[in-house]
Amino acid sequence: MTPTAPMPFLLERLRSSIADPSLFDDDTVTRFLSDGYVAACERSRCLRTWTTQPLTAGFQEYALPSDWLETLGVYMNGAPMEELSTRIAPRGDDGAFYYSYDGVIGLVTTPTVSSGNYILHYARRPAALTQSSTPETLFGPEWYWLMRAYAAWHIYRLGYGEEYVPEANRQRTMFDTGVAMLERYSTSRDEAATNSTPVAHITSVPSVVNTFA
Amino acid sequence: MAETPFPVEDQPLLDQQNDASYRVCADTRALTKRTTFATVNGQREYALPSDVLRVVGVSVGAQLYAHITTDVALRYISGLADVSSSPRYYVLGPNIGFQPVPASVVTITLYYEARPAALSALGTYEVGGDFARLVDRRANTNLFDDDGQVGVAAAEEAFYRAESQRLMRRRRKVGRSRVPVIGYDAEV
Image (cartoon, rainbow over all chains, first blue to last red):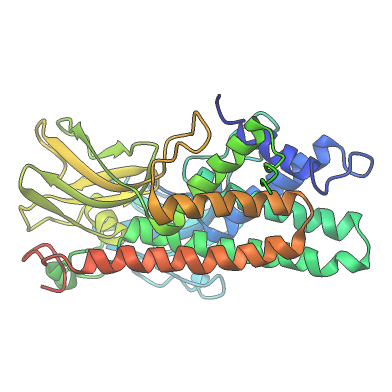
């Protein structure tokens, strides 16, 4: 005997309890589950990665990755860059600053030579799920209950009467609490604060190393 | 009077137990596992095994590798000069990386909190004792929820939360009682 695949299992759980087929067809319930997955990943920022972007002389702005959700950090020449607000960026301050809006990252100081690169550490947006797909590894099976809670919240909210509002709220609270747990888990997974070693010499490194000469 | 068996067929019960088993192991950190893999000359990052929940230690023989945060790791990756010769590791998303970049083939031992393997038969959990009992209670909570017994499910949910936290505290107490390692534990 082998366990049922995640989406059919979650669909069956909802079908056997609250998702009346006359009110919600399979595609709708699948969309609720997928929306729960995407919402949990986006709110917790549990899908984290980094990428390298080569610099090009004369180019100030670089496109963000298509799955970009939120910038967690930008690094160049061994140091983190500082983000400037959209309002201040046009002032053209000299230094390791960047700005980000409208699908691009802009370096406040435009590179004058085509060498070097910057590193973008960012949270990713997941692809929507279908009935036959499986969530990403970083959203493991221990978190699938979040999708069920999210879908149940919406089914109670849309398909049941006022007397079920408390149950809809209970499902929503479970989802919210679970997402907060997922966010704490994802952060501690990468940062492992319990045994990280302080790196004393980092503090002596200049905060800005200019390669735009 | 003999108890009436809970009227759940094998496959749905296996699915619920499987789901509960994953959740209990993540919420209580009940399983710790070990594996080894070899580094490659010039390769910084390696995919973690698919059952890793959280890396708790890395060593090569008796040498413990220290952990660095992603912020420190990305400074090195982006060009910060490394004045230390001791090897360190970081975890970023689904990968584990090393600083400095391995220059030779080294067998790394990885200690990690793990998610259990998928069940192939009812009740064959990888954990025992209080943890196994909690898996059963968690599966029952799901079944009450799916059966529309929302009041019972809510009460079971509250029990689960309290019990998983108690088991987690017990795990942490055991973890703290070990001897600190000079040069590895930040507080030493």
